[in-house]
Image (cartoon, rainbow, N blue to C red):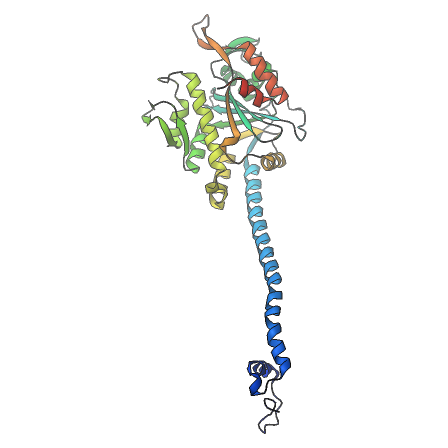
Amino acid sequence: MPGHENDGDNTPRRADTAHLDDLLSPDEGQDEPAAGARRAAPQARHRRWPKIFLVAALAFVLVIAAVLGFYLKSLGDAVSRIDRDPALLPDASATPIAPGDPIDFVLMGSDSRGSDQGRSDSLMVAHLSGDREHLYLVTFLRDMWVTIPANKTVTHDSKAKINAAYSWGGPALTIKTLQNLTGVTMDHAVVIDFEGFIKLTDTLGGVTVDNPQASTNLGYTFKKGRITIKGKQALAYVRQRYNLENGDLDRAARQRSVVTAIIDKTLTAGVLANPKKFNEVLSTASDTMTVDSGLTNSSVRSIATSLKFRSGAGVVQVQAPISGFGKSADGQEYDVVDEAGMKELSAALKNDTMADYVANHPQ
């Protein structure tokens, strides 16, 4: 039979040459069933597509798992290096935070140098809403005239600027003063010194803010409009208070805007999609801050993964209310707390209704 002869060779035909018969046309001796086989071949190739798709999907899942594993490991390594101080909070037995509850962080930027305790050059409460959709940065002016509880330095309650609490009793006394002022128990504390601030903005490659008024400070010039700042330049920007139209109020606004810009830059694709940069930012942040002992590795991961905002747009800037300015008996100029306004702010923090507060008190 054509195509089945061995040309006198008694050696059996090799099985791996059998496919050659399929290449022969019918007039070359190919039987009709072979034609049917040719028609079935496209169907066989079609049946292979689901397998290819499944393999590709599996590879994609494995890549995603590897990436997530890297980020979770980086986050875990970074939070493990954070300094934790059980003395930051005045009350170590804070009430556990249940799912859906808001979280209040006290953020302090200190100007401490060596053995000098320094003062809290910036003081904010970062209120993370219960739905985790917004973070409200509430600035408390450093010159607010408040009652500071008795402490090792002053043995009785006394009136002073709020930043004096840091030099008299460190973060714990500052937080205790804030709690007395607002009636709100603070959940966590974060302290970053100015050297840490410089490193963080440098690692991020600078942050961009809207500067409402041109100014110069410490040899740096800041034009009006969108500017990008980092390192010592950023430090000069947030520390300036003189030669600004509204003095300390403008300074506080600058501090809020830079913190917002840091959060925004950290959440951008340029950082999150760049494993090396992401790891650098986390490492710098963890090496330049001190937190309370309640901010454990697991709690940091839990809070980080619960956030529902993905940019600085989820951060809302708020100024704690003042009603004017005064001067103490010894000649200190200070900011007068708006008592009625403070009650409203306190209620909003307690009841997690900051959105309503902001709507009723445009900044």
